[in-house]
Amino acid sequence: MKNLIKNFSIIFIVLLTFAAILSFTYSGDVEPEKVGVNRLIQNINEERVIEVEVRGDFLLATLKGEEEKVLEVKKEPGQSFAELMSDYGVESEKLQKVNLLVKEESGFTYWMTLILPAMLPILLIIGIIWFMSRQMQGMNNKAMGFGQSKAKQNKPDDKSKKTFKDVAGAKEAKEELNEVVDFLKNPKKFTEMGAKIPKGLLLMGSPGTGKTLLAKAVAGEADVPFFHISGSEFVEMFVGVGASRVRDLFDKAKKAAPSIIFIDEIDAVARKRGAGLGGSHDEREQTLNQILVEMDGFDPNLGVIVVAATNRPDVLDPALLRPGRFDRRVVIDMPDIEDREQILKVHAKGKPLTKGVSLRKVAERTPGFSGADLANLLNEAAIMAVRLGKKKIDEEEVLDSIEKVMLGPEKKSRVMSDQEREMTAYHEAGHAVVGHFLKNCDSVRKVSIIGRGMAGGYTLSMPEKEIRYSTIAKFKDDLAMILGGYMTEKIVYGDDQLSTGPSSDLKKATQMAKKMVMHYGMSDKLGPRMYADNEGLIFLAQDIHEKKNYSEKTAEMIDEEINELLNNALVTAKEVIKTNKNKMDDLVKVLLEKETVEQDVFSKIMSGSAEAMPDKVEAEK
Ligand code: ADP
Ligand code: ZN
Image (cartoon, rainbow, N blue to C red; front, top):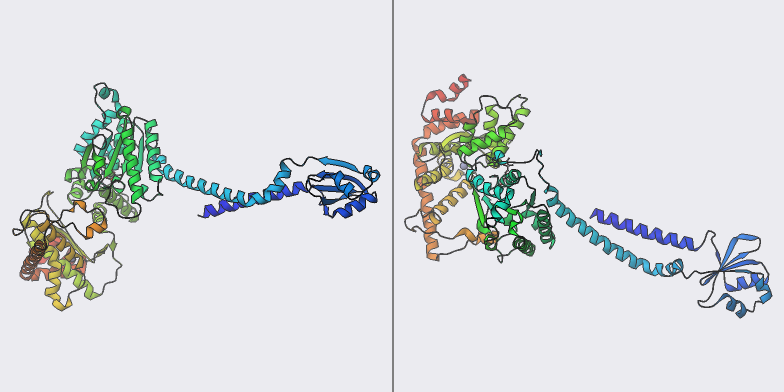
């Protein structure tokens, strides 16, 4: 906007000076004195005029002895000088003494001087319009330039070039993508066989699982240019820009063929059509249409392959998945423990770790971490080591970073009253004790009353082994553990002292119970049925009014079942807490002193061994 104003003023000033210069050149180098016809006639009669210059409708007279002075007279348009003189009865004898110069002023300057004053506002408006359109184009160009700037040819020595070596794990995905590399490298091999090279490939996986990385690696392996654009960028733009940008992108890619076009977050533009909410909907549709048109338009054997990434394949417009479009789909899973170790190895390169750091151990402790999380984890560890002035990264920094990535940075500075601290300690101890004594819960790794992110304290529990599927028994125990903090507060402080702290626990427990009943068929009464199918939960509004595919009566039953699950979990938690109240008190004592209790000390306290108690712990130190 600032630019716009600046440019306007520049135009304005240029036009003004132009006009000013014109009017100056017209008036000659001497400023003429404007006089009436009578004065000129008088001067001629007195024989004081040497020269009269006729310039269009103006007469410029030079006087004897006053050469630097010029008189300017305006005559009637169309009337000649001679006519004027005879009208005023000037004697021809006197006229002959005057040197008459007729300047053909009907040329450019003459007309300009006449027209310009009238034209100036119009010119100004035209200038403004012209400028506005240029400005818009500039914006377009900038928007396009974003996609273009990244669309560089990967040079063999390019440092940012990725290959499959940079992608750890994801074996199946890499195998599938190897085929694509083959298409790009030897398209002839396939066309000679009469095979059509696929045009589109859809990478599906959670955020941070390395979809972008894989697409780049494909380009790197095949050594072809990589054009990158993100679906969410389209949505921010003016109407029509998205489509033109798509066109431009495809044009470039086609020129550079064989090449790869990567569309990140395609779900941002390619949601099911007709379900629209929100203003940018039309823009989205246009952009999607343009993508489809472009994909249908080019020759499959050209060697342009469109790779799109999404973490929500369920919301994609079916038109996108039709044959000839994104008919190849590759699912990228969250990394399992082996993959995590490999990914950590890739990212540990170039980071000096001390010998004690076991990446295996880190992989064990990070279920549910994506590749991006793991990369971030090691980066955080490196930063922490620098801050501490260390030469190498110790295990301590790496393990600390796990929690930092998982829960946000520690908030040691948060001021808590003693009472709040104690309450937090009991709350966390409640989770930990219930989690420890219920056999289906994951083992407790750490209990802390240092706030992190939104949480006042936290209990970290993780499975010993990777698990893919949960069971009813595990869900029930987990529910009890989640409600353990709430129950403990009730038991220790009484019903009327319950704090607002456990609200996020309650939310989590409710959601879990709801899923068990409605999605997993874990209620005998309701049976193996999927209630409310959440496939259509595209937009916020639909999230609120979950698609209901059951009767009011069933809704009541669902409510009852959810309540029963939660109440049973509460009873379980209560039993565990009551029977282990002494151990809980011990844990709270240690927590208040140390703030954080690690797994080994925690197990000792839970086994009732006195050596884990504060004075002992202190002595060990
Ligand atoms: P997505 O596109 O799926 O959201 P990215 O490809 O942008 O994820 O991944 C982000 C970062 O995470 C990558 O730049 C890389 O550093 C790291 N990463 C993710 N997956 C892997 C992997 N399998 N191997 C190595 N690094 C990975
Ligand atoms: Zn809690």
